[in-house]
Length: 223
Image 1 (spheres, helix red, strand yellow):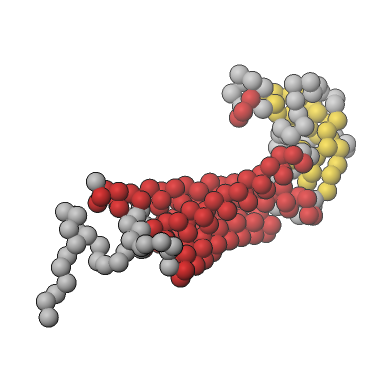
Image 2: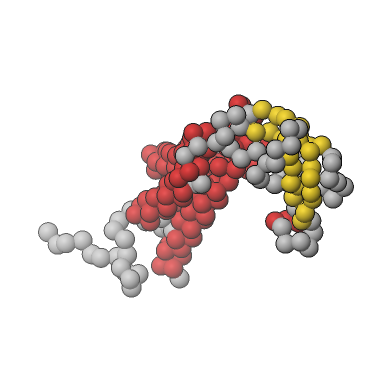
């Protein structure tokens, strides 16, 4: 049971507070990984590079962090938790970054609803309503809008849409609450990733060589 507990949660073979250098290493690794995931995702959306904007580079960074924790001897459960947090952060960051880009350099213009689809039971994500819209000049937008589109929306109604003049971010309806919620989610996931990484690294500390598969530590060579 002791060997199983060590494999799952890490050995944590220290008395009292963990070594300061070990805690610093865990915090540094967590900050580096979260910064890389958020940084490459945001940069990819800002510059319009598909490989970065899709979150693929962030997933690579999350996988690299998981491999690093395995090499340090961290517990398997903590490695899994940290890796899942990294994957969630990599997938959420591009969505939050798109809203940030539209807030910084985007423009807002009115559009006219031409049709409304979706809703509960229609098979759309979270039962969303999707509005097809056209610009004031009658040019249809290539994407359907769900922010600001609801069950009471009818063809001919007006909506406000934020768009990127450089065309690197898909237009979307104006909804400050949704954008702030996503930014808060990114911040919460990044903090959780740093804390989880620090805990995993601290608990990986061993006083001696790792035990064998039988749970018995190898004896040191005789003099």
